[in-house]
Amino acid sequence: MANDTIYALSSGTLPSGVAIIRISGALTRNALLQMTGPLGKPRTAQLRLIRNRNGDVLDNALVLYFAGPASFTGEDCGELQVHGGRAVVQAVLETLSRMDGLRHAEAGEFSRRAFHNGKLDLVEIEGLADLISAETEMQRRLAIEHAQGGLSALYQAWARRLTHARAMIEAELDFADEDDVPGSVAATIWTDMAALSGEIANHVAGAAVAEIIRDGLKVVIAGPPNAGKSSLLNYLAGRDIAIVTDIAGTTRDVLSVDLSLAGFSVCLYDTAGLRDTQEPIEREGIRRALATLEEADVVLFLSDTQDGFGTILSERENRRVVRVATKIDQPGQVWDKAQYDVAVSTQNGEGIDRLLAIISSHLPDLSGKMAFSIPLRSRHVDCLRQANDAIRSSLALSETGLDIQAEYLRLAGDALGRITGRVDVENLLDVIFSEFCIGK
Ligand SMILES: Nc1nc2c(c(=O)[nH]1)N(C=O)[C@@H](CNc1ccc(C(=O)N[C@@H](CCC(=O)O)C(=O)O)cc1)CN2
Ligand SMILES: Nc1nc2c(ncn2[C@@H]2O[C@H](COP(=O)(O)OP(=O)(O)OP(=O)(O)O)[C@@H](O)[C@H]2O)c(=O)[nH]1
Ligand SMILES: [Mg+2]
Image (cartoon, rainbow, N blue to C red):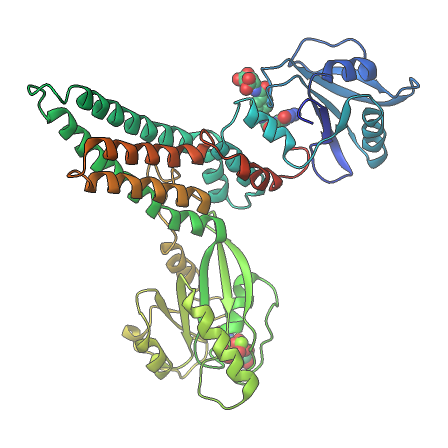
């Protein structure tokens, strides 16, 4: 299995201008030789005729050869950069499939080989998967930080501190019989371990930001019936997603749309108007609205009258609530500026920029140098928590004995090692690599 030479279309949907077929494994040179003639200089594109087994010309294409280990997978690799027609790609794949020892790659198999050959660790591999699925600028920045080893370096530095601490403890244990060894070595170690525990806790707290980058900021539009909630959703989405009528109680289901704001994804929800009612369908709509509100990062509470902001708002946590006065194009409404945060009209667009600026102010600030050094996946967060729990246990056991404390530090190091895949994660690999598309 692992010795097979694999191939796959690595570029996207056909037809396309150019399509890239990748090959990796020991028989790569052979395959390229048969189809394209003598190999050129490694890592240098050659324009060559591609032929099938009968010698028929399939395409005129660029051919690349990477001699292992200097390749993405660490094995000999080849690329056929052909014209992206369906029949062209089909014919090339067909020719490859007829060669002995070659088979089509499985999802993520190229990356898996890169992992096994030590080219990338698991955090980098997962970062690569995120990079391929990144749709917003912030998702891209987070993914590239992970894919380029930013996080791995951090975890390795932490693991080194743990190893160092254990070594110092071992040394102290070895000389424990000699009365003249002061406890001072261990004292600096424990200060550093306490600091490390704080750093890990800080880092884990960043996962909340990563979640906003990945899933988007959840912004829920709520308020009394007829306030103009659905109109606002449609206005911000730039299309008619929700039904708008002048009948109070129009919206029942929760509707949502993804917007892009300042490089972030913002998930905007429209909900049923909140009021006391016996109408069963509307009641269900209101129940769903309240459930959606529970999940909100930011609530836009809309009202087209001043009293509309009253009761429901005051019962809730006000911090994340933005009071939006609506329909300000309508003459005759009197508003006390102290009663709302922003006033808008979806009729003439007034106040919308200000509203977007307010939403943006709830987005995480990622201007700091380490801003993208945050964990994204629950797998990482779990391991980090385990590592930190072990460090804390070690710190707490100062009465019990250095050997037990050292053992907890070893457990902490193992937990960190599992993140990058340095420590036994064989059972996880299938899950991680199956996230990939074929050809990656
Ligand atoms: N045509 C093409 N474009 C592509 C890829 C590819 O495979 N083919 N990539 C596919 O992911 C990405 C580039 N990633 C790559 C990563 C490592 C190596 C590589 O040859 N690594 C060697 C040499 C390193 C060096 O020279 O600095 C190595 O790691 O030893 C190549 C591509 C994005 N663009
Ligand atoms: N003049 C004016 N009318 C508006 C504005 N926004 C909404 N409306 C009108 O107000 C009425 C209610 O709008 P909707 O967007 O359906 O209100 P809603 O809050 O979604 O109502 P429910 O779904 O019933 O809770 C419609 O007749 C809209 O055309 C606005 O900015 N200016
Ligand atoms: Mg509505």
